[in-house]
Length: 505
Image 1 (cartoon, rainbow, N blue to C red):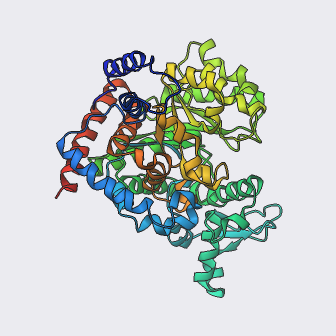
Image 2: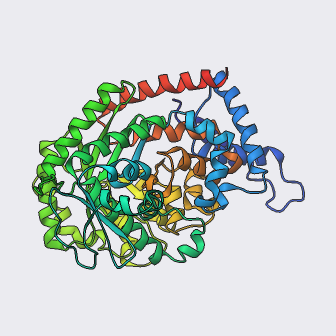
């Protein structure tokens, strides 16, 4: 892959300097100076330093023709809410192209939001010993048990699902479960009028899935199914933010986080053995940012121990949960400083800047993430408002994990053409595209988010060069070792060249 040519940029800079003596106010601007400015801007953008070969140029020409047709259509999907735009995207030739395209890695994905919820409902809830209860917030909870489960506060009596299905219409019941497990709705604007409402619904969906996915046998199957769905979307490597909660057995016994990480390791090895083109997966251990400072010290202590025991599968640590309502990173500074104090390696991958409330305590999270040497920044939506932080991140070569659909559904931005990542791409800031919680949004592993970024962020300026840099960025900024990155990129190049050749057939 070609890197940006500093010599060319220097030549353009010198050209602009030599032309700077042209009168600033002129009815006839120098066309050479204008062209030099256009070329400089193009080279600075994401993909601007990528040189396409002859085959890639032919593919790019076809892609740009498809893109132009879609951008001229009356309804432009990135300007619409994803739930309304999805049928248009699914029918799009550009989307079809992106689905087939090797996309490298998905670096920002949450554990309980990987697998399409239809599998949880149509498969998992039909298994023996599955109980359900209905709470006073119009939601449901599930649990597997060999005996009648203990009652939950604010919830109805646990009912065996097999018995309930014999009394009710199974299709209607299943559809109600699906609605509880996703945010998908026909009228998202009225259903979710503000961030408080949509975030409450978002967190409820995780709680609904919790009792199903933490059942030990399902835990392993769910991870395998999740890897399969990403693999089918032409993704070769995944980094999963995982809570690693205590899983449970049918008799109520619980397992430790160590058990969960060992289970993840086994599943990943098994999946790789059956899918030779899959490069692997790693876990970023996460906890909710609502915990207190004392609890944080205990968690970081456990994270260091787990990372030491499972260095191959555990990539590092992060906080999750709504940033605007949780404790800022600086609140946890004592705990986060423990690894360095003890000379222990524990990489951080912090969510930071997932907010449009500037000037608040959490608005400093991106700066603090860099001060704590975060390997990447999750979301970084507010980065454009922090020029010093942005400059520091660039110098540190810290990429931002951009999740377009998540940012729109959770009401940070409505029209994705106005997403701050459009500006980051225009200046060639290092970013990777990811999907955050695709199952909750009814999205594919990564292709829908790539579509929104390609069409919405870049407009007609983004092309195959843009896509190629974004794809290879995903491995470049992964937690893989230098040797693993080299091997992964070599494999990805083979897949990329094959895709280009097949596209020309």
